[in-house]
Amino acid sequence: MRRKRKQKDMDRELLDTIFEVEAEWKKLRHIVDNSVEPMDESGKKLQLSEAKFMFLLKEAKHRKISVLRY
Image 1 (cartoon, helix red, strand yellow):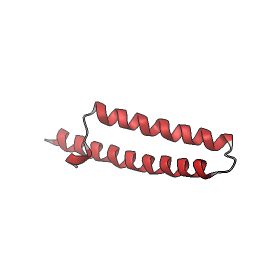
Image 2 (spheres, rainbow, N blue to C red):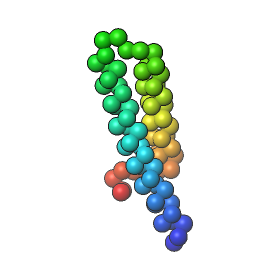
Image 3 (cartoon, helix red, strand yellow):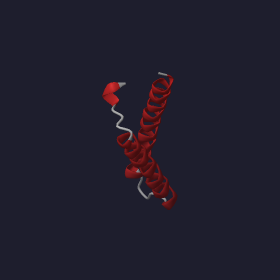
């Protein structure tokens, strides 16, 4: 019983992190899209945040976590 509770807590934490990283990624994407002349650093930050988001989504899929369950 303890393991399931611990696993649920970890799953919720993963989902929270996914939502935070998604918001950060969308914010950066909006800034870069609306920039007249985006800097290279901004593009790299955008790529990094997108990679983090995709990694976390793959991890959630691997763990078979659904937002609808929580």
